[in-house]
Image 1 (cartoon, helix red, strand yellow):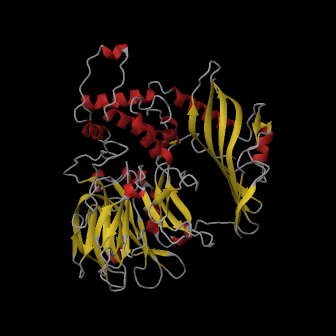
Image 2 (cartoon, helix red, strand yellow):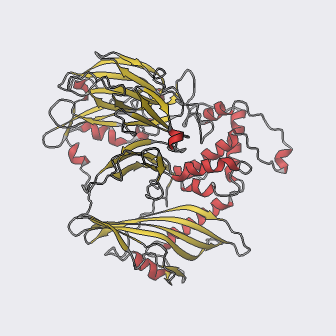
Image 3 (cartoon, rainbow, N blue to C red):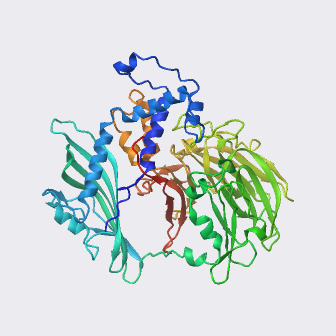
Length: 611
């Protein structure tokens, strides 16, 4: 059967983008015309809107004051008032889902081939082959029922196992007949005689307004399919249960989910609704096998799982001395004292901590220091080439004393180019477990308050030292060029500011030219792509519209050409990775070319329509 993600539940991410940009619209001072009724009413002023907006979305704060209610009411009204294109988009999307159900009664219309008969093989190896439609789709049309039958012909049972649609563009009706168009991203997958196959396509759909909208035609924009080779295929198997069968804490704690613990733990322990906890792999006890350290929510102990010879994992958190119950978002196995074993560096909310490994997997705390921001991630490199590994911590939100109430998102103002976040830290390793803050001394205090989520070191200019890329939420990123241990932010002149919702950064040589190329995980928003192309969106401030559109585009890949970088994201077809949180270059099929794996998703809940 088809699995439509979103029939009963919808991802908040689709509509959250709409809320965010409208909040920014309000806080940037864009005035909306009042209707006649409202013009007669006395309106409350909007003092310190960023502070009030944050307070408005804090849970368990009791009755909101009148000023907060003004902001919330205006936000709700901005979403509900006049966005006819979104109403049409939802209706057309729902109707298309209905028509793509295998048991649906289909209209007798003619459409283009949805699986072109002249597919060309664009890639092949011993595991799989990729087939794509040639440039310039055929104008030949056939009945919709026949086109869908051909599309699903690769599946022996006649239809796919999973299907997902995204409406990323809508052109509202411009004629009395009520004709409008939508653009759709189509994903399907299912089992074939040789293994699992996948289909990716984009459609241009024409509709006539109605209840429900009437589908008139479908034009194919592009199409590709990935087919497994006989007895091969790029297959992965979920071995989680067997690997953790000797670790009861995995089932008792990690598998219960955030909602379970949020209803049982005090909020001031540091429970995080987004679940932004990381892991690290490293050989904790020196047996040559990689072990796993798992960060947990505040109020739950962090976990160190040692790998057994049979591949299973066992929980040694308590006896190893690493079962901290403070909110921990990131951890890194790294040799901080050059003794050959893997020590630990942790980002624990408002603190950073270092622990020494005795070589047998027993850890002792050597340093715990307060941070000027809420730390989210860290990366290690010997930036000054003195033989000791140094650390860089990303701090997303400002410290509590600077921002008494974080709220869900912090206080990014403006939303698309914020520069009022928490400060990041460069911690220099002076040897003998002596560390110092070298952020300002090394020039990394420039552009250092941009709601940073992640960072990664790489020698992008091939001069022998480590440079630093920082991915920032709510705006432009940083690329710090290392010049003899001093840093200059060159992201703008190098063309890699990537003004978007930066979540992570990974480096890899995707074209095998010997130069590292950065891939940044951002947020693809179908809702954002739709509304930012509507005339109603931020009318009168056209010079900012491109920034908002860029914010919704998705992930970015930049080609390092030596003197600068070139954005090749769309040509490489790597922008659409949904709401991406992290990515990694890795050669999955051992063909000598680095592939990209992306972790994505967001909180799923009932869509009440209140956005």
